[in-house]
Image (cartoon, rainbow, N blue to C red):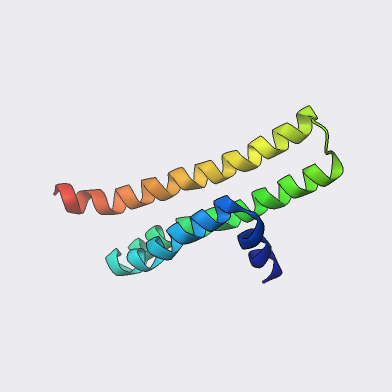
Length: 105
């Protein structure tokens, strides 16, 4: 619980993603037809939150260990951000694949 509190208190991007997840998770449970669709809509936003917390942890450790710029420190931060980005893209793809056929067909 302390980690969730720290993420909420210190990370603006985590707060934004929580607000989005608060909308998407119940909406996914409502819109999903059957358990697989529900999982496909609900799991990605939760994974985004998890990745954001891990990314924030990496950034905090890197800043503590090496406050001055170092190529490896920058790479670690960039890779953490890339993981969050990929999960955001997966969220959009999952929602699109589940809901697009309903709107088009």
